[in-house]
Amino acid sequence: MKRFMLVSAFLMGLCPGAFAAEQSVTLSIENMTCAVCPITVTKAIEGVEGVKRVSVNFETKSASIVYDDAITSWEEVAAASTNAGYPAGKVE
Image (cartoon, rainbow, N blue to C red; front, side, top):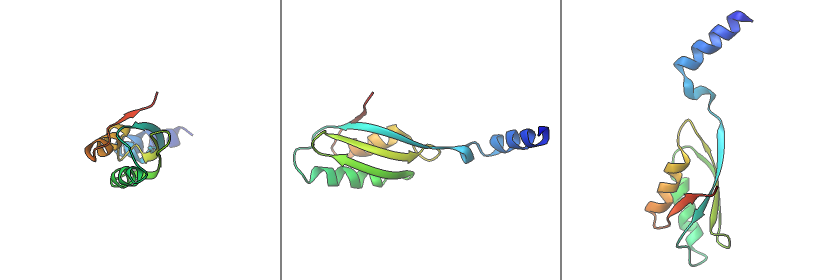
């Protein structure tokens, strides 16, 4: 057991991202004015490396995203939407 713990600690030091987990976040999305806007937001967010799933809701002006936190962050995902013209922020 001691040997397993030492090997695990060693591997975590070498590959901290190897044990990353999928994270989920809900973002509020501004400037969506028509039914086509969610398509643009979806494509922008899907273009972020590490994003696994995206669901944009026009009615609630929000997006639910699942991403790999070893590759990206919710801030990077929000920036992709913002850069596409739809400012995004984390829903607390």
